[in-house]
Amino acid sequence: MSSKRKGIRKEWELKRFLENNGYLVIRSSASKTGVDLVAGNGKEVLAIQVQSSEYLPDEKLSELKKYAKAIKAKPVIAIKKRRWFFVSEKDLEKSGKMWKISFGK
Image (cartoon, rainbow, N blue to C red):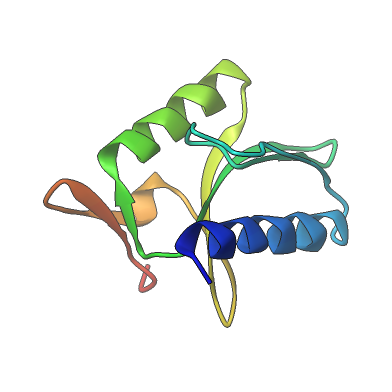
């Protein structure tokens, strides 16, 4: 299975997970932006970048923050490692031109 196909599957899986937990979710199909999903539950709005890898390029993080700011949403990176983890910029460590998700914080 291609990495693109795996990514799409993860986006749909997270969409269902969030909907089952009280969020209304919009998926950005064929997203070339830093935002794959926008989710809200009446209390908060999340701009979500779904990751398969623990590494996030600078440009994706910048795009995520730009779109989140424009729609007054909280920027979140979602990654599944047995369960879903939702991390923010403070949970990232700089690694060259990439950001690495730190699960230890």
